[in-house]
Each structure stands twice: as structure tokens, then as C-alpha cells.
Amino acid sequence: PGSTLFPYTTLFRCRGWLKMKVAPLETRRIFEQQYQMARFLDRYYTGRVVAANDIGAINYYADIETVDLWGLGSNEVAKKRIEIRKDNFRIQENTGTKKDTFVLSKEDIAGITREKNTDIALVYDEIYRVDGESRLPDSWVPVGRSEEHTSELQSHSFISYAVFCLKKKIFFF
Image (cartoon, rainbow, N blue to C red; front, side, top):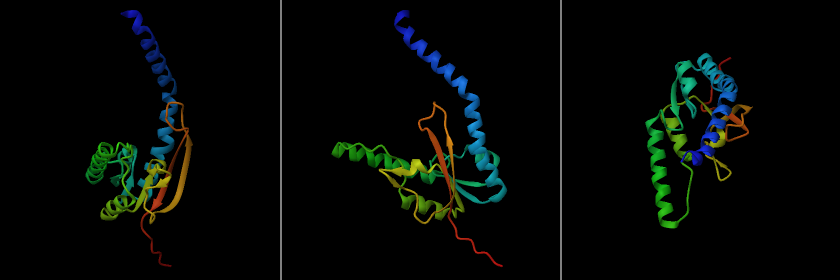
């Protein structure tokens, strides 16, 4: 029995070693991405409503109200994602066509962020691209983007987040 487990234990040891080797790099990535987003939001959007899909650091470091577009921190989004998942399973049962996306529609995202009176969105916009088409509302105005190269442990070779303005500002001179 021990000899059949040897390849698996070796694999897990190698994977563990690799993760320990890149942990400092991954910690730096969190500082370069999420912590900087949190600083920006804390400085310019304190007390305001922000839409995001990676809410950990921005909620910890910034005094903001968050609309979590991934659904872990916003019940409205979570309920919509559950509906989408149920619909996908029904489609698969009836047609045999498998749908893997649980991303909300443009209309759902626009409706939820409008209802919550959201000021700005910081999102990893690639996860909202389904079949080559963006699911982010057309009314969102892109105002910035950051791209970072990632480590070999992440599924993408780079990660990109975009900043969108959701409200028009009126300036008085």
C-alpha cells in the first residue's frame, strides 16, 4: 500500500514547496493590487458605495459600503447567481448543452448597482467577459486600468482590473 502512495506524496510535497517558494511574491501581489485599491478608495471614496468583485482588502482597509459583484458579500448578487446556476442546470438537462458561466447579465449588474446608488466600480473585468462579450453595463465609463503579471500558480499570466465611473459628476466653476 505504501508504494502506491509514493507518487502522490511526492507530488503534494513538490506542490507545497512551490507554494512556499512563491508565497512572498503572492503577498507582494496583494500589496500591489488590492491594498492600493483600498488606499485609493479610502482616500477618495470614504463613506461611498463601491462595486467590486474582490472585496477583502478594500473592505478591511477602506471605510466604504460594498456591492460585491461576485456575491459573497451581497445577498442580491448571490441570489441572482443561484438563479443563473439553476437555469444553467435546466438548460443542460433539457438540451444537453453545458453552460459554465454564473456571471450576471449587464442588466442585472446595472440594476443592482443603480439600486444601491453605487459611485464607482473596481473589477477584474476579464471575468465578466462571456463568449467574447462584456457583461459589464455599457453605461459604465472606464477611467483607469492596471495590469500585473502573475505567478505560475495563478490561472492567468496577467491580471487586469479596471476602474469605472458610474455617475456623472457636475463641476461648478
